[in-house]
Length: 445
Length: 112
Image (cartoon, rainbow over all chains, first blue to last red; front, side, top):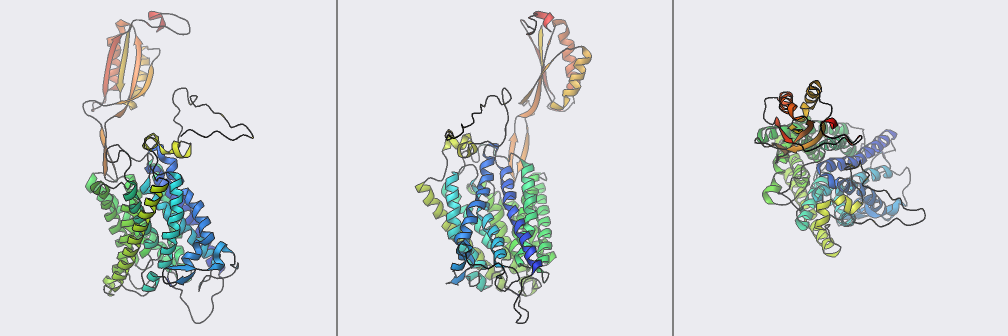
């Protein structure tokens, strides 16, 4: 979040317009998590659809509670050593007045808190795409809780919290290129290096089971991203939020086209998955940069991100790590591209007067961006790998090979996504409702 | 009696059904099938990963006919199924020892 613009010494007062706008933006960002669930859910095989949806959904549960208990305080409380925050009044949201304003802005603390909560929810959910088909649900739930606590909350403080080192250094991350996308992408890489590949990786066909679901998810993400980005200015008073909204649309369009053109040349077809992926790569890249670049700059950011991400998704086959749904290829690469391009394309006419290389500002901002990008990348990669290692050594991170082959949905959730009624029109399955007042039988995994 | 089996492109089903009805065939069985012939399948691309899909969707049509109608019926099916492009399928016939209509117990040609 950028520093507040203070006109004269007048204390800000609660703005009903900005408050309403931010509540709507918060709801839009919330919608991104179910959108992500569908985006990922369509890309996996039929037998692990529900698990993929649940890995995103559970974040809505776990992170919300942690955020209320201590997350908001750690991320945005009073700075300590530029690394973490704390404010005991915010623990359990216990001492926040309804009309108490967020530091220097015209919206209540509650509104800022809930807007930021939605970011905290979607970031761990993003990681799940790399772990498709093979992680125990309990292990994943524990991972989310630990990761949010030791990675997301501190990194959010570094980047957006007053006193956080990246914030103080002047790293520009409008809406989460480092804190959200690089953070999640690097975490995904860290975890998959520990847990290994899916059974049958590079041998069995693992094509998406429902591209319409992927498109539905990508559409919801695109829609919700307007809240994610335009809301990150925390108000509507000076047009920067609107620039962000406009740039979000432009970069996404450019990235989708760039991905599709690359694909047509390289593989001979404009694919649906390419359109959806290209759009997401543009959204990721414009997230950190959208407040700093001009609309033409947004075309460049989107096109470069779309092209590089399309090229990057093939790396997993080259290097042999199984990033199932390309979280590294899309979120890490897209986040790095968008964050670094701020140093080249910042026009000085958006959220700040900082100018990038192409606008006469030299390389200063570029190096600052590099510091933010690589610090978050390294911290998240290493700590996430350690968390995955510890969980793997204690409770086990992966389901058994048999369960993975038979389908994680049945093994972990006692459900299957679709009813492909076989012989007898489904009569082969006998329904035995649990008798009233008795415990239902444990499902055979 | 003969059993005529045709494994053909799914979108030719309506034409074949109409041709068989015009020929006077009373009943048939249709199953979804998949397979490939000499042309093999096709290639699909997902984020640059290419998948060769060997088994392509087909339908299998089965008709029981009397011996003297078999050759003519094969011609009818072939004509209706043909598009002239690769993957049009195959039609064959095999001898059938007996057939029984379940409802009445009639046997042989009476059961057709």
